[in-house]
Length: 129
Image 1 (cartoon, rainbow, N blue to C red):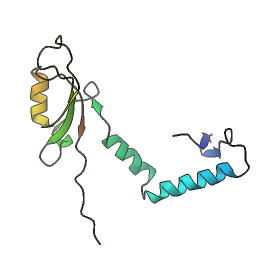
Image 2 (image 1 turned 30 degrees about the vertical axis):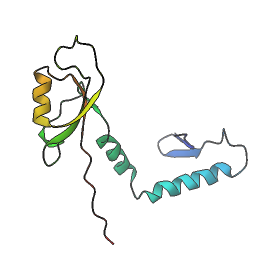
Image 3 (image 1 turned 90 degrees about the vertical axis):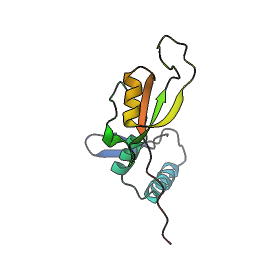
């Protein structure tokens, strides 16, 4: 996303007018972006939390634990397609839905060379009319 603002000091913010020559255009674009953001109904903290929940977590960063899974303990894992030996040629990236316990078992036994994992998204909620 191209930024329309820049921060300065502790609380300062200003419009960046470098790429927009016509007077008032940057302000109009900024107002439309602000309206689009407000239409999400989310705060900046909620957006940051969503981004964090929807990212692939490298195994080198941390292993999943039971609380990372959904109600049934399921997570998504990405592994490189090698079944046992890391010296085998990489087949392709595989994405699987598996329980945390099963993934850790396959990872620790060397059967899967897991590279990343992520919690499953929340299930859809019924809309009320």
